[in-house]
Amino acid sequence: MAKPIVIIGAGINGLVAAADLAARGKPVQVFERGPIPGGAVRTEELTLPGFRHDVAAMNLSMFAGSGFMAKHGEEMARHGMEFVPITHPFAQAMEPGDYLGVSTDLDETLATFGSEADKATWRALMEDFPERAGVVGGLLGTPMKRWPLAKFLWSKWRALGTAKSLEIARFLMSSPRSWLEETFEDPRLHTALSTWGMHLDFAPDIAGGAIFPYLEAMGGQAMGMVIGKGGADVATRALVKMIEAHGGTVTCNAEVSEILHRNGRAVGLVVNGEKVEASTILAGLAPKHLLRLIGWDSGDPRFDRGLEKFRHAPGTMMVHLALDAPVPWKADALGKFAYVHIGRSIDAASLTYAQAAAGYLPASPLLVVGQPTLFDPSRAPAGKHTLWVQVRMVPAEIKGDAKGEISETNWAHAKAAMAERALDLIEEQAPGFRNVIAAKTVVSPLDLEAENPNLVGGDQICGSHHLNQNFLYRPVRGFADRSTPIDGLQMIGAACWPGAGTGAASGFFAAQDIK
Image (tube, rainbow, N blue to C red):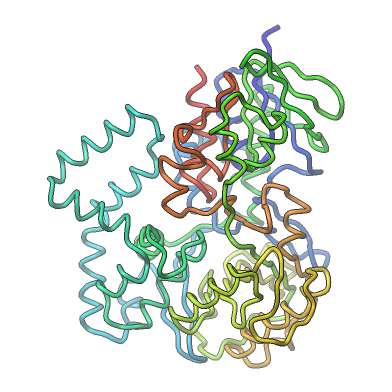
C-alpha cells in the first residue's frame, strides 16, 4: 500500500489541500490536535444555546473566490457549502451618528461621501478596478516560484507598459495613509479605508499596506461580501465531507509531537505517541511550531533562524455577544452593514497600533463589529442576534494601560475590563446597546492561542505582512515557495505566501505541486 500524504492541522489550508488531493485519488490523512476541525474557521455556541458564533473568521469572500472553489465548487455544494450574499459589506462609524458606508449600490455608497471630487475619484477607481485587480489579484494568486512569478511579471509588463507597471509597483509599496491622502481629500474616507489595513497588521503609516484598503473597498463596491450559511464552519464541514467521500481521513484530538526525518528526507510523524509513515508531509503550522517539531534543526541554519525570528502581529481580543434585539445604532443605516468598523480617525488608528505594539492596552481600540444575523437569521433563535466583535490591536503581553485605568497586567484578570472599554465604544455609537445584551463571552489573545497554538499571542493572521516578511520573504527568503530544507516536507498556512485570509491559496498551491 502506498504511503499516505499526511497533513498536520485541519485549518482551512490543510483541509483544502486534503480535499483537492483526495479528489485526485491520493491517499490523505489529516491530523488535528483540537477536538474539532476548522482552525480559525469554526462556529460554536459560545454564549447561549442556539446562538452560533464564528470563533475567528466570519468573512468567506476570499474562500468563495478561491482557486479551490473555482475547481471544486459544484462538489462542495453537494456537501452542503452554501453562501449568504451581502450587498452592504462594511461601514465606518466615526463621530457618533456619522458614518461612511460601502454597498454594491454605487449611488448609495457615494451618498455617504462629503466631497464631490472624491465621488468622481471613486467612480474612476471603479472603472480602473478590473484591470488593476487583474494585476494585484493575479500577483496574490501566483506562487512565489521563479518561473511562475517571472512569467506573471513579464506578461503584465508587456500588457501594461513600463509607465503603468512602475505606477502599480509604487502603489504596492505605499502605506495606507500615503495612498489615501494622495487619492482622496475627505479625512472620513482616509479613516474608513485605512481601517482595512489594520486587519493585516498595517497601521496607516506602514509601507506596503495600501493594497488591502484598495482591494476591500473596490471589491466591496463591486461584489459585496459573502458569509457562510449557518456559520463559517459550513466550509469546514463541507471540506471534511469531501475528503471522506474520496477515502481520506480527518482525525481530531491527534497531537503531533515530532516530524520524523532522516538524511534530509521527511519520513513520518509521531502522533499521540505512535509513528505514522508518510510519503509527503504538509505542515499547517506557525513557524515556531514547525521548528519545534523538526527538532530545531532542518539542516539549514538560515532557515532555522528565519523561523525562530518570524515576527507575529499584535494580538486580537474577541467579544462574542448574544443579543435580544439588533444593535440600536445612532446612525440607523449602520444596521444594514455586515461589518461596522468603529474608529474616529486615521490618526486614532495609528495611535492604537503604536500603543499595542509597545505592549500597552490601547486607550481607544479599533473595533470590527460583525452583524451576521442581520443576513443569516439561522445563527440565532427567532428575533435574536449574535454580535462578533474583534478588538484590534491589543498586546499579547501587557506592560500597562495607555488610558491609566486598568492596573492588571495578566490577561485572565484584564480581559473583563478591556471588554467593557470596547462595549463603551459601541455604546457611544448605539445608546442603550448594553440593554439588549443577553450574554457575552470574552476571549483574550492568550485564550485564542491556548485553543489554537497557530494564533501566537492572539495573532489571527499568523504573522505580520510587512514588506520584509511578505512576497519573496514569507516566511523566509528562499522558501517562499513553501519548501523546506527537508525533502518531502512543505509548509502551508497563513505564515506562507500569500498569507492570511480564507482563500487557502497556500494549501491549494501545495496540493497542485503533488503530481
